Image 1 (cartoon, rainbow, N blue to C red):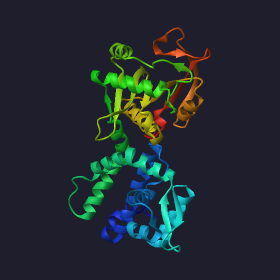
Image 2: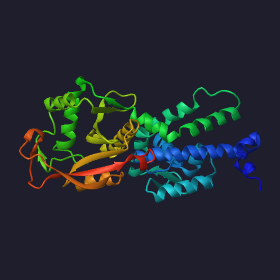
Image 3: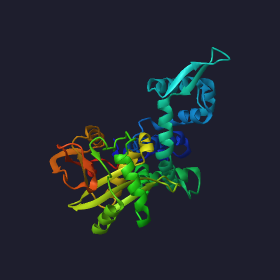
Image 4: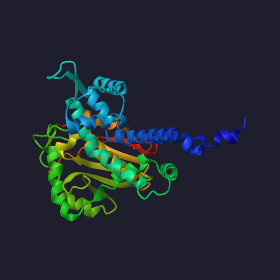
Length: 346
Protein backbone atom coordinates (compact mmCIF):
# COMPACT_ATOMS: atom_id res chain seq x y z
CA UNK A 1 0.00 0.00 0.00
CA UNK A 2 1.28 3.47 -0.94
CA UNK A 3 1.28 5.41 2.36
CA UNK A 4 2.06 8.63 0.49
CA UNK A 5 -1.33 8.42 -1.22
CA UNK A 6 -3.09 7.83 2.10
CA UNK A 7 -1.44 10.89 3.66
CA UNK A 8 -2.83 13.19 0.97
CA UNK A 9 -6.06 15.06 1.51
CA UNK A 10 -8.08 13.24 -1.11
CA UNK A 11 -11.26 15.13 -0.24
CA UNK A 12 -9.59 18.46 -0.90
CA UNK A 13 -7.88 17.19 -4.02
CA UNK A 14 -11.23 15.96 -5.32
CA UNK A 15 -12.24 19.59 -5.90
CA UNK A 16 -15.92 20.10 -6.67
CA UNK A 17 -16.51 16.34 -6.81
CA UNK A 18 -16.12 16.02 -3.00
CA UNK A 19 -17.24 19.54 -2.10
CA UNK A 20 -20.13 18.28 0.03
CA UNK A 21 -17.85 16.06 2.08
CA UNK A 22 -15.32 18.86 2.43
CA UNK A 23 -17.93 21.36 3.63
CA UNK A 24 -19.35 18.80 6.04
CA UNK A 25 -15.87 18.17 7.44
CA UNK A 26 -15.29 21.91 7.82
CA UNK A 27 -18.69 22.40 9.48
CA UNK A 28 -17.99 19.58 11.95
CA UNK A 29 -14.64 21.13 12.82
CA UNK A 30 -16.16 24.55 13.41
CA UNK A 31 -19.00 23.13 15.47
CA UNK A 32 -16.53 21.13 17.55
CA UNK A 33 -14.53 24.26 18.31
CA UNK A 34 -17.64 26.31 19.05
CA UNK A 35 -18.54 23.56 21.52
CA UNK A 36 -15.21 24.21 23.28
CA UNK A 37 -16.04 27.93 23.45
CA UNK A 38 -19.46 27.11 24.89
CA UNK A 39 -18.05 24.75 27.51
CA UNK A 40 -15.50 27.37 28.54
CA UNK A 41 -18.41 29.77 29.13
CA UNK A 42 -20.36 27.17 31.10
CA UNK A 43 -22.90 26.52 28.33
CA UNK A 44 -23.42 22.78 27.93
CA UNK A 45 -25.75 22.69 24.93
CA UNK A 46 -24.28 21.71 21.58
CA UNK A 47 -23.80 24.29 18.79
CA UNK A 48 -26.04 22.30 16.45
CA UNK A 49 -28.91 22.73 18.91
CA UNK A 50 -28.61 26.49 19.14
CA UNK A 51 -30.36 27.47 15.86
CA UNK A 52 -33.57 25.71 16.86
CA UNK A 53 -33.47 27.30 20.32
CA UNK A 54 -32.74 30.68 18.75
CA UNK A 55 -35.79 30.39 16.48
CA UNK A 56 -38.01 29.69 19.48
CA UNK A 57 -36.43 32.56 21.39
CA UNK A 58 -36.90 34.99 18.50
CA UNK A 59 -40.33 33.93 17.23
CA UNK A 60 -41.98 32.18 20.16
CA UNK A 61 -43.63 28.73 20.18
CA UNK A 62 -43.66 26.94 16.83
CA UNK A 63 -45.07 23.73 15.42
CA UNK A 64 -42.62 21.02 14.40
CA UNK A 65 -43.48 21.71 10.75
CA UNK A 66 -42.76 25.43 11.16
CA UNK A 67 -39.44 24.65 12.82
CA UNK A 68 -38.52 22.27 10.01
CA UNK A 69 -39.18 24.95 7.40
CA UNK A 70 -37.28 27.58 9.37
CA UNK A 71 -34.33 25.21 9.84
CA UNK A 72 -34.40 24.04 6.22
CA UNK A 73 -34.45 20.41 7.37
CA UNK A 74 -36.86 17.51 7.10
CA UNK A 75 -39.62 17.03 9.62
CA UNK A 76 -38.23 13.68 10.87
CA UNK A 77 -34.83 15.29 11.52
CA UNK A 78 -36.46 18.22 13.30
CA UNK A 79 -38.60 15.83 15.36
CA UNK A 80 -35.45 14.02 16.53
CA UNK A 81 -33.78 17.31 17.42
CA UNK A 82 -36.83 18.42 19.38
CA UNK A 83 -36.93 15.10 21.24
CA UNK A 84 -33.27 15.51 22.22
CA UNK A 85 -33.98 19.01 23.52
CA UNK A 86 -37.01 17.76 25.46
CA UNK A 87 -34.76 15.15 27.12
CA UNK A 88 -32.43 17.99 28.15
CA UNK A 89 -35.40 19.99 29.56
CA UNK A 90 -34.63 22.83 27.15
CA UNK A 91 -37.97 22.71 25.31
CA UNK A 92 -41.45 21.39 26.00
CA UNK A 93 -44.14 20.09 23.65
CA UNK A 94 -47.79 21.05 23.95
CA UNK A 95 -50.90 20.99 21.80
CA UNK A 96 -52.19 23.84 19.68
CA UNK A 97 -55.28 25.59 20.98
CA UNK A 98 -56.59 25.85 17.40
CA UNK A 99 -55.84 22.29 16.33
CA UNK A 100 -55.15 19.68 18.97
CA UNK A 101 -53.41 17.50 16.39
CA UNK A 102 -50.57 20.02 16.02
CA UNK A 103 -47.67 19.75 18.44
CA UNK A 104 -46.31 23.12 19.58
CA UNK A 105 -42.71 23.44 20.76
CA UNK A 106 -41.72 26.15 23.23
CA UNK A 107 -38.72 26.98 25.38
CA UNK A 108 -38.61 25.96 29.02
CA UNK A 109 -37.15 28.39 31.58
CA UNK A 110 -33.94 26.32 31.39
CA UNK A 111 -33.89 26.73 27.62
CA UNK A 112 -34.51 30.46 27.91
CA UNK A 113 -31.58 30.84 30.30
CA UNK A 114 -29.33 28.73 28.07
CA UNK A 115 -30.04 30.72 24.92
CA UNK A 116 -29.74 34.00 26.80
CA UNK A 117 -26.36 32.97 28.22
CA UNK A 118 -25.19 31.89 24.77
CA UNK A 119 -26.33 35.13 23.21
CA UNK A 120 -24.47 37.24 25.77
CA UNK A 121 -21.20 35.42 26.42
CA UNK A 122 -20.69 32.91 23.60
CA UNK A 123 -22.04 34.29 20.33
CA UNK A 124 -20.09 37.59 20.38
CA UNK A 125 -16.77 35.77 20.73
CA UNK A 126 -17.65 33.12 18.15
CA UNK A 127 -18.84 35.71 15.66
CA UNK A 128 -15.69 37.80 16.11
CA UNK A 129 -13.48 34.72 15.73
CA UNK A 130 -15.24 33.62 12.56
CA UNK A 131 -14.88 37.13 11.16
CA UNK A 132 -11.13 36.90 11.72
CA UNK A 133 -11.07 33.77 9.60
CA UNK A 134 -13.59 34.70 6.91
CA UNK A 135 -13.27 38.44 6.32
CA UNK A 136 -11.37 39.34 3.17
CA UNK A 137 -11.70 35.98 1.43
CA UNK A 138 -11.45 36.07 -2.33
CA UNK A 139 -11.21 33.74 -5.30
CA UNK A 140 -13.36 30.74 -6.15
CA UNK A 141 -15.40 28.86 -3.59
CA UNK A 142 -12.71 26.18 -3.42
CA UNK A 143 -10.07 28.87 -2.86
CA UNK A 144 -12.11 30.35 -0.01
CA UNK A 145 -12.70 26.98 1.63
CA UNK A 146 -8.98 26.24 1.40
CA UNK A 147 -8.14 29.59 2.97
CA UNK A 148 -10.54 28.95 5.87
CA UNK A 149 -8.97 25.52 6.41
CA UNK A 150 -5.48 27.03 6.43
CA UNK A 151 -6.51 29.73 8.89
CA UNK A 152 -8.07 27.21 11.27
CA UNK A 153 -5.01 24.96 11.04
CA UNK A 154 -2.81 27.94 11.87
CA UNK A 155 -4.97 29.03 14.80
CA UNK A 156 -8.11 27.11 15.78
CA UNK A 157 -11.39 28.94 16.24
CA UNK A 158 -11.53 28.11 19.95
CA UNK A 159 -8.13 29.76 20.51
CA UNK A 160 -9.22 32.83 18.57
CA UNK A 161 -12.42 33.12 20.62
CA UNK A 162 -10.47 32.68 23.88
CA UNK A 163 -8.09 35.47 22.89
CA UNK A 164 -11.00 37.74 21.99
CA UNK A 165 -12.58 37.05 25.38
CA UNK A 166 -9.27 37.80 27.11
CA UNK A 167 -9.08 41.11 25.26
CA UNK A 168 -12.24 42.19 27.08
CA UNK A 169 -10.12 42.33 30.23
CA UNK A 170 -8.71 45.87 30.29
CA UNK A 171 -6.41 47.38 32.89
CA UNK A 172 -8.40 49.51 35.30
CA UNK A 173 -7.99 53.27 35.22
CA UNK A 174 -7.91 55.41 38.34
CA UNK A 175 -11.37 56.68 37.43
CA UNK A 176 -12.65 53.07 37.55
CA UNK A 177 -11.70 52.48 41.19
CA UNK A 178 -14.85 53.87 42.87
CA UNK A 179 -17.07 51.75 40.63
CA UNK A 180 -14.90 48.67 41.20
CA UNK A 181 -15.07 49.15 44.97
CA UNK A 182 -18.85 49.46 44.86
CA UNK A 183 -19.13 46.34 42.69
CA UNK A 184 -16.86 44.26 44.92
CA UNK A 185 -18.66 45.28 48.11
CA UNK A 186 -22.03 44.53 46.57
CA UNK A 187 -20.90 41.15 45.25
CA UNK A 188 -18.97 39.95 48.32
CA UNK A 189 -20.79 41.62 51.19
CA UNK A 190 -24.17 42.72 49.88
CA UNK A 191 -26.85 41.75 52.35
CA UNK A 192 -29.34 40.92 49.60
CA UNK A 193 -26.85 38.94 47.54
CA UNK A 194 -26.98 35.14 47.41
CA UNK A 195 -24.45 34.55 44.63
CA UNK A 196 -21.32 32.43 44.70
CA UNK A 197 -19.06 35.31 45.81
CA UNK A 198 -20.96 36.50 48.88
CA UNK A 199 -19.18 36.29 52.24
CA UNK A 200 -21.82 38.20 54.19
CA UNK A 201 -22.63 35.19 56.35
CA UNK A 202 -19.04 34.97 57.63
CA UNK A 203 -17.65 38.49 57.35
CA UNK A 204 -19.41 41.83 57.73
CA UNK A 205 -18.33 45.29 56.66
CA UNK A 206 -16.65 46.35 53.44
CA UNK A 207 -14.72 43.91 51.28
CA UNK A 208 -12.47 46.81 50.30
CA UNK A 209 -12.35 50.60 50.20
CA UNK A 210 -11.07 53.02 47.62
CA UNK A 211 -7.98 53.97 49.68
CA UNK A 212 -7.11 50.29 50.18
CA UNK A 213 -7.52 49.49 46.51
CA UNK A 214 -5.45 52.51 45.51
CA UNK A 215 -2.75 51.35 47.93
CA UNK A 216 -2.73 47.84 46.44
CA UNK A 217 -2.51 49.14 42.89
CA UNK A 218 0.27 51.60 43.75
CA UNK A 219 2.33 49.13 45.78
CA UNK A 220 2.18 46.32 43.22
CA UNK A 221 2.88 47.82 39.79
CA UNK A 222 3.67 44.39 38.39
CA UNK A 223 0.11 43.24 39.15
CA UNK A 224 -2.94 44.01 37.01
CA UNK A 225 -6.41 45.00 38.16
CA UNK A 226 -8.52 44.21 35.10
CA UNK A 227 -12.07 45.24 34.28
CA UNK A 228 -14.67 43.39 32.20
CA UNK A 229 -17.34 45.06 30.11
CA UNK A 230 -19.62 43.34 27.65
CA UNK A 231 -18.66 43.82 24.01
CA UNK A 232 -20.17 47.04 22.74
CA UNK A 233 -21.22 48.17 26.24
CA UNK A 234 -19.54 50.56 28.63
CA UNK A 235 -20.95 49.52 32.00
CA UNK A 236 -18.59 47.65 34.33
CA UNK A 237 -19.73 44.05 34.80
CA UNK A 238 -16.74 42.40 36.44
CA UNK A 239 -13.11 42.61 37.53
CA UNK A 240 -10.21 40.40 38.50
CA UNK A 241 -6.74 40.84 40.01
CA UNK A 242 -3.80 39.03 38.37
CA UNK A 243 -0.32 39.06 39.85
CA UNK A 244 2.83 37.16 38.76
CA UNK A 245 4.37 35.05 41.53
CA UNK A 246 7.44 33.85 39.65
CA UNK A 247 8.27 30.46 38.11
CA UNK A 248 5.43 30.86 35.58
CA UNK A 249 2.84 31.04 38.40
CA UNK A 250 0.26 33.78 38.83
CA UNK A 251 -2.09 34.71 41.64
CA UNK A 252 -5.74 35.32 40.71
CA UNK A 253 -7.84 37.22 43.22
CA UNK A 254 -10.87 39.46 43.66
CA UNK A 255 -12.78 37.72 40.88
CA UNK A 256 -15.99 39.72 40.85
CA UNK A 257 -19.04 39.93 38.60
CA UNK A 258 -22.26 41.85 38.83
CA UNK A 259 -24.49 39.74 41.14
CA UNK A 260 -27.37 40.21 38.71
CA UNK A 261 -25.31 38.46 36.02
CA UNK A 262 -23.99 35.52 38.03
CA UNK A 263 -26.74 33.13 36.91
CA UNK A 264 -25.82 33.88 33.29
CA UNK A 265 -22.40 32.27 33.66
CA UNK A 266 -20.52 35.55 33.62
CA UNK A 267 -18.25 34.41 36.46
CA UNK A 268 -17.22 31.39 34.39
CA UNK A 269 -16.59 33.62 31.37
CA UNK A 270 -14.47 36.13 33.29
CA UNK A 271 -12.46 33.35 34.96
CA UNK A 272 -11.77 31.69 31.60
CA UNK A 273 -10.78 35.02 30.07
CA UNK A 274 -8.43 35.69 33.01
CA UNK A 275 -6.80 32.28 32.54
CA UNK A 276 -6.30 32.95 28.82
CA UNK A 277 -4.94 36.44 29.60
CA UNK A 278 -2.44 34.78 31.95
CA UNK A 279 -1.57 32.07 29.45
CA UNK A 280 -0.84 34.67 26.77
CA UNK A 281 1.73 36.21 29.13
CA UNK A 282 3.56 32.96 29.71
CA UNK A 283 1.69 31.81 32.80
CA UNK A 284 1.49 28.06 33.30
CA UNK A 285 -0.19 27.88 36.70
CA UNK A 286 -2.78 29.97 38.51
CA UNK A 287 -3.21 30.05 42.29
CA UNK A 288 -6.26 31.27 44.16
CA UNK A 289 -7.22 31.48 47.83
CA UNK A 290 -10.73 30.83 49.14
CA UNK A 291 -12.06 31.17 52.69
CA UNK A 292 -12.10 27.63 54.07
CA UNK A 293 -15.80 27.57 55.02
CA UNK A 294 -16.91 28.50 51.49
CA UNK A 295 -17.48 24.92 50.39
CA UNK A 296 -19.78 25.79 47.46
CA UNK A 297 -17.23 28.21 46.03
CA UNK A 298 -14.37 25.72 46.47
CA UNK A 299 -16.48 23.13 44.62
CA UNK A 300 -17.15 25.72 41.86
CA UNK A 301 -13.41 26.14 41.35
CA UNK A 302 -12.82 22.38 41.45
CA UNK A 303 -15.26 21.96 38.56
CA UNK A 304 -13.10 24.41 36.64
CA UNK A 305 -9.89 22.47 37.10
CA UNK A 306 -8.54 23.89 40.38
CA UNK A 307 -7.12 21.52 42.99
CA UNK A 308 -6.18 22.04 46.63
CA UNK A 309 -2.44 22.28 47.16
CA UNK A 310 -2.66 21.27 50.82
CA UNK A 311 -1.45 24.72 51.80
CA UNK A 312 -3.47 27.12 53.93
CA UNK A 313 -2.96 30.74 54.89
CA UNK A 314 -4.06 32.45 58.12
CA UNK A 315 -7.02 34.78 58.14
CA UNK A 316 -6.02 38.37 59.09
CA UNK A 317 -7.83 38.53 62.44
CA UNK A 318 -7.40 41.90 64.06
CA UNK A 319 -7.23 43.74 60.73
CA UNK A 320 -10.74 45.05 60.21
CA UNK A 321 -9.83 46.97 57.07
CA UNK A 322 -11.21 44.02 55.06
CA UNK A 323 -14.29 43.45 57.19
CA UNK A 324 -15.15 41.96 60.55
CA UNK A 325 -15.14 38.12 60.79
CA UNK A 326 -18.15 36.52 62.45
CA UNK A 327 -16.35 33.23 63.21
CA UNK A 328 -13.05 32.32 64.85
CA UNK A 329 -12.17 29.36 62.58
CA UNK A 330 -11.52 31.13 59.27
CA UNK A 331 -8.47 30.55 57.09
CA UNK A 332 -7.65 30.52 53.38
CA UNK A 333 -7.40 27.37 51.30
CA UNK A 334 -4.89 27.55 48.42
CA UNK A 335 -5.96 26.03 45.11
CA UNK A 336 -4.01 25.81 41.86
CA UNK A 337 -4.74 25.10 38.21
CA UNK A 338 -2.24 23.87 35.63
CA UNK A 339 -2.99 25.94 32.52
CA UNK A 340 -0.88 23.70 30.31
CA UNK A 341 -3.39 20.87 30.76
CA UNK A 342 -6.54 22.85 29.96
CA UNK A 343 -6.03 23.07 26.20
CA UNK A 344 -7.10 26.68 26.13
CA UNK A 345 -10.44 26.07 27.80
CA UNK A 346 -11.54 27.09 31.21
